[in-house]
Amino acid sequence: MKKLILLMTLFLVGCESKTLEETVTNLGDTPKEIISTLGKQHGMELDYSVGILDDEITFVNEEETFKVNLLNEDFYIAIAPYHTNTHPWLYHNATGCSGELKDVKFDVKIITNKGEVIVDESISSLKNGFFEVWLPRNIEATMIVEYNGLSNISEISTYSGDPTCITTTKLT
Image 1 (cartoon, rainbow, N blue to C red):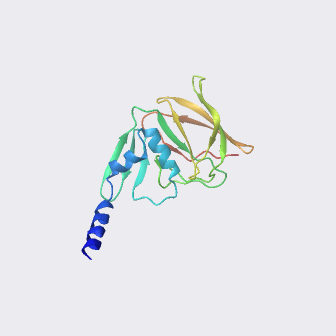
Image 2: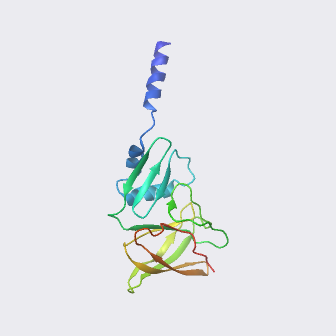
Image 3: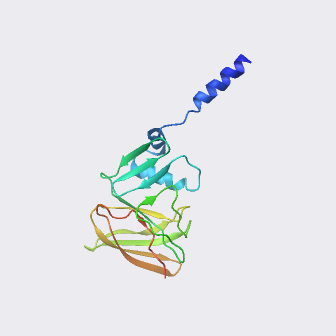
């Protein structure tokens, strides 16, 4: 009986919850790796939420908040093209936001206002219906998204305070 109690005690001590910093460390070594891993976890039950602002990733649970600086990185934007349903949003919630078109491939072209093509590729949306791009900071650009004969042309920018969640890309 004593062995059973000892084993149960060791098991419970070994199951202590991790701090958010330890959780984030397990997600990846760089902000891009962390966000990529989060995109693959959509739909999983997690004990924290994650907001991606223009300058930081913020992890929050009932006990603590942990932040990862993004100012030394390119500008992250999550884009959810849609046919019929969308929702207004400003900063991407990596653990809760859902778009309409999940696991589909979009043709995406992004051209700066100086004429430089910075993205010209097929990009698949994740399980959450968003595709993600990392763009240079402090630019204005035109984004062209095409899917299944439908398209959208919109203006985006990557200045301080700009949205990291674009849900206004209606395909027509």
